[in-house]
Amino acid sequence: PLGPVNWSGTRQLTLDFVILNPAGWFGGDQGIRLFGAGSPDAQTPSPFYCSVDGSSASISFVFATDDGVVRRASFTLPAPDTQVQRIAIQLDLTAPAVLAYVNGTQVQVLLAGIGPGWIPGLTLRANDYCEFQLGTCLVDALFNPGNITDQTVFGFKLTGAPLYRDNGSGAAQVRLDGAALNDARQFFQSESAFHALLPLKDSGNDCRRIPWQGAQAGGAGFGAGTGLFLHDSSLGVTDTRAGNTVRDLTLMANPDPTGYGRALCHGPIYDFKAQDCIFHSGAHNFGALNGAVGYPLKVRDCEFDYATDAAIYAQGNMWWGERLTLKYWGREAIRSLGSFLDLRQVFYTPDGFHECVLKLHNSPGGVLDNHNMDFENGGPVLAHVYCEAGADSGPTHLTLRNVTFGTHAAGVNYIVLLGPDAPNAHYAPATLLLENTQHVGFGSIPGIWTLKER
Image (cartoon, rainbow, N blue to C red; front, side, top):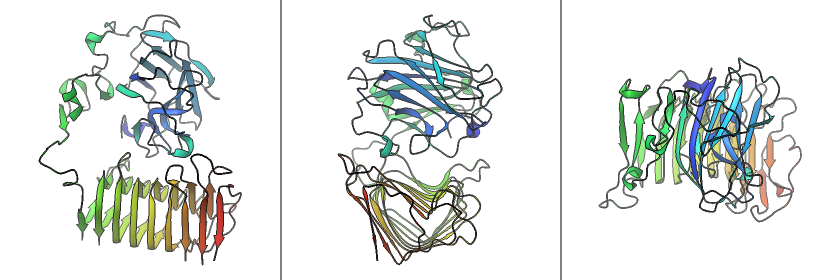
């Protein structure tokens, strides 16, 4: 994870970032995430994210504290038509206070959305196995319009301490240590308490490597270096990512007590096969990098055990699975973002608290055939199957055939469907087909969905 372990106990941080927007501003886009960690629906920070509201030319810093309150601080950009915006946001929960600086000047921060209990002594809420992401295309399309203006995050730095003085709105941005704040310092130099650094550099050569540094600045800990991106013109486009197979293996994530990591993590892959494997521990037993696609993934006779978040995390995938066993997962057994799932003969062994068994965001649909969810008492708190209609993948067609859900918690529906009340420019009509499948009610069904039963 980016930042302190789980972010638990964090009271102070400073975010420095530079945005280039060739169009001058962000049009009418609202609530578009710039960066941060949170739920796929872009609603719940884990523990924070920044978003932009083009209608008011403002930036919002949204964060969750350990008392369970989601808090929002916002500020307006003084010159929204400026293409390059150099921004700093400083959070100090010991005060508590949120400060903001734009292009070298401190600006007023509005705390109308800061929420109750804004008192000294708060800490950030622990991260709930959500990835830190730059940009907007990696979250659920239900909360992301399709008219996002081109933008570039040129540099980003996260520091676990205050860096700037509070001299009031309109005052020049001044560092606490008195050092000059100018381009000669490259703005994104490393700090003694920094956690993450994407330097602001212009050289094209730098685009092929990722700078990294150990736990402490100055070369202490693991030191510093760069990781290379392989670029070899002698290799074909798919030579290293097509036709790969794993077979007869037990793959275990690092047994980190925080529960992070993945037993298998993939980027863009094509015609991938896994057979007779055990994927064990980590936040995800089997997970995809956001922003990449993979298809088809053919997985047979495999077991997924003890994931702290989701046993399978699919993003931009086409999954074909047969004879799978998923045991003792965390929030969901399967979480899918924009992925087609054809899964047959699947057995689920629940354990403890679960939100869902399958949670399908921006779903093109799929086929769930002969699934046995072995709930013998209670059940997930949200739904067994939670499906959002796909906004950018054509009509959603989801088939549940020969599915046994087991017991369910009081007041919880087996199936929850989401989507607008009618088709529109982004959403086509969606269909749910139930064949020989146990279910108890749906609650309200959005008008975009048609339910068929056999």
